[in-house]
Image (cartoon, rainbow, N blue to C red; front, side):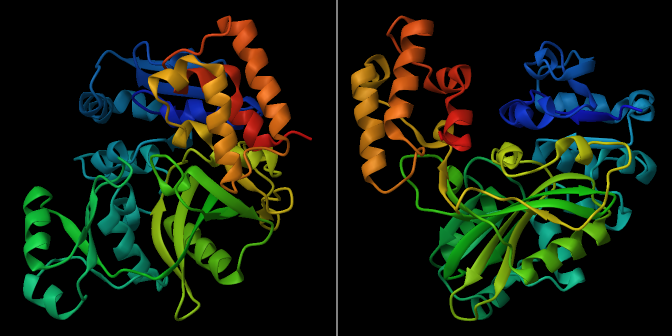
Length: 392
């Protein structure tokens, strides 16, 4: 019997950018989204439930009020947005309906969805190693506890770090607190940043891929360039399994960690119960999405993503930025990519092949003129998939 999985999103941005995950599965995907959203028009969507609202907050309010729709949702639900889950978790819905809507099935941990404060509380309850953090801010204790400089975070996600700030003193911390009433304060960890993309079913960890976040090049966040590895440290795996079992997780998760330089320990930094822009890479590393999305998945031993020789991968849609001249000149564009290549990043296994493919697409689809909307162009020609898969 074919399984049905609901994809809930106002617009569907992360579901669309990870469409390879869904296209390679035999599951039926039900889109719960705003009317005429891009998600509703994707080829992997078999059914849709549309909301006439066109503002994200209104979309969530509509969904929370429609218990008749929630009743009809399948057992497994995926989200691509932290703020929406945050609102659902804190709504007046009963625990029964929250359990149907959220990827967390244990009511004791609903508050983890979309909440940085909730994540830290969860780490503490489960004994998961994490950076020293103050949640209920008492400015006197902060001054005596976590030394400045430290990191202040609002209890929300997104925006490439818009809701986090390095604060040097108590005055700056108080200013941040006035802007974001619910905040946490965290010590600065010296070490190396890693990320794990995971897939859970019924609390069981089915798949994980482990990568190091490398230096920024041009762009919007530290996850624009990564080196993936063929093994995951055992302490990380055990932490992921502990969390999955306790929260009774279903679906895609991304977790950020730091390997602390002094102690040599992996500290869990954030644990987002949704997919991120790197989730689709798993289809090249051995994820069996057909099994993961099946009615009764085979819960065999954890499968680790297997990249090719721990190679570096770049997602160009997240870091390439162009001047007007570069955006309208294929030659200038190629030169920019070549400079990135010289910086030590491996755009692809073969740069000449990348150049040839890019020029061919320009010639065939755009008659030699690159549109100013470079992100739309990259998606249209499949350049993102090309680079991540590698040219052999």
